[in-house]
Image (cartoon, rainbow, N blue to C red):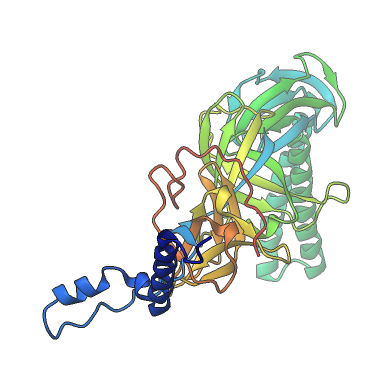
Length: 389
């Protein structure tokens, strides 16, 4: 057997040794680089490595607030009442001689409502006047005599006293006669009549009910949280149960709360010259608190702090986020009306619950059709922002 190694084995060993030497040089890792460098013009530096990518920032949608003066509406339920109501009653005993009014009749202040028969009273007036006339003549004669020095001073004094007594008797008789007549103390409408002509009445017997309906008063109750926002003279809007609308003025706010309901009576006066508004009708009153500078936002942008405070997520001029506490002024169909939003910030309307205070963010405009401030059209009014951090 020959000890010589076959030729093909020798060739394989040579190839393996050459490959190992090539790997050791490292040229395999830059295949083609020599050709690229050779192709570049002389003096051209090889391209530097690419700069590291900027870290990605959270993206939020934010808009600038639109401030406006807003007067919060305070809505109350009440009913109309007469400005004044009085029961007219007989002022003396007697038979009804004339009844001058009927139910539903409008009368002026001082108009005669009823007159009683009183021939004896009228006779007493005539007698008292006759006596007075006599005493006046007697006093005149006595004063002439006294002026000539022929009349005692004591008798002159008695004559003057007699005249004064006669004058008092006339006044008393006329007062008794005046009580036979019943007159309206103020202008109004006769709501009911309870006497009849020819009826015998005793003093104090009800005759008619008189209502003053101009102005007419709408009375309601306001809770203790809102009573401080209402003052006499404030404007009010009134809607009656039949749909009619009126504007009036607050004329009275009670300073004493009901012990049962803890509410305060409020009265709104409405002009009612023709008496078109009756008493006892259900009404809705809308009063307005003093206006405050506020912004209207969708309910969906509201967030809460860790402590549970109501607020908004805002970004400053450097696009850094902040939690901004706010005060709820009103809840309207257009959205929540908030006070306390500072100038120079934008309100985050999308992504507010995905960022924290002091975080740098990218700020973009809301997408088309998304929520905006001051234009709440299309919002369903639902949603109460999630808890923020």
